[in-house]
Image: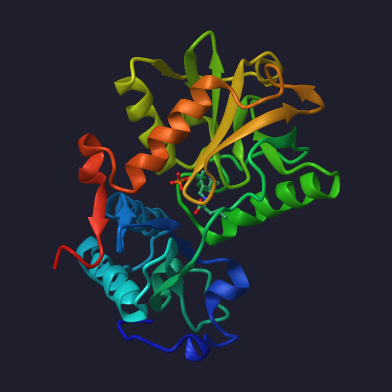
Length: 297
Ligand code: PY5
């Protein structure tokens, strides 16, 4: 917390922090995977770079560098002695100041939170619905920034979906094209070609999305970033979500239509296996994406 290791119970903020009132915070979700008594943090630098870019978009006076944040993450995991799978949540937020709406006036604070996490979704094949809420447009709020305030959009959509008995929401952008899930990017497989909405469809530029684009291309699949219409979802061979929390999660039903034969498809299964091996350090070609917590220093 602001450079200090603080016991969990004492890691508190005051009710006057600007971030509580206006959602003025940017954060990251990162995973560390346990293998052979080591923890490998997946694409740590890429996540921290995105964090700093998010702070830049909203004009925070952010004093933190990737190097400082990287050290803080490693130090926090080590101090806890974790050897299991962990979720890492660095957050840069606006501190005590209730009345200012000028980001450049606000005191900037930072914390790194780490806790054990296994699966995010309780089941493997999700039933999703297209939300009545649209993904926030870049002309009003920056979906490219992983900003706390943006998540009200996600919470409205996800809550509505769960109230209606679905597992997750899928949001359309303001032009009516498919954007993303409440906290996940989307991939569609049709005739062995992968498609995912472009960055212009109000998505968060996911690091898992980028990982899947690279891995699928290396496996010989054609991968295209292009606008996707709602009804393409219904006729897809396979659909899956990607995200740090979600990892690669298959979608088996959209708006009551079964996707493919309603079971997890072969392309999704293959990429899931590759992803699971990659994040645990079992794929030599992708070792560069991993930061070992205990071994390296
Ligand atoms: N889109 C949104 C809106 C997200 O919140 C996330 C990540 C993604 C896409 C996927 O991005 P990445 O692959 O870089 O993780 N969501 C967070 C996560 O940790 C928070 C989920 C509650 O996965």
